Length: 168
Image 1: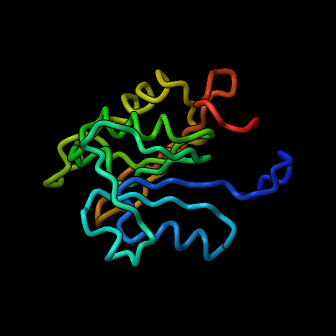
Image 2: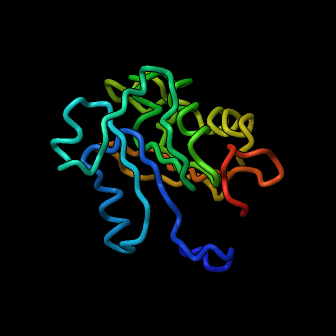
């Protein structure tokens, strides 16, 4: 979205965890070439198979990426449990100034390899404890052939944000 009403005039910047080849970033930049997109992926060959569009980053280290963007995105990351919920939540929380967009498969959805499913109330409580508010009700989306829920959560403007975040 264009934030000219906030006086900054620039499109929102985005960081995506487990970005693959960066299809989300490429799509958003096709709509607005000025959008800043940082794609990170834990596969060692991510830079080569994305033609250097996505950088390698190992979430399992438990250290958040040194990047600061408006929105942090994790699609299909939290429910697979590969990196541990705490590491992903920390990376999302410490890298955004405005909010997060995530998918998280609800409990009761059967799919091999999705060991960390969460019911919507649990997801909301986790993010509310970090100072986020749900922007709109979660919506069903299809991700990796599975119906999951997409959540858009914004930081509570009354609570502290990471250092170096510009004024809203």
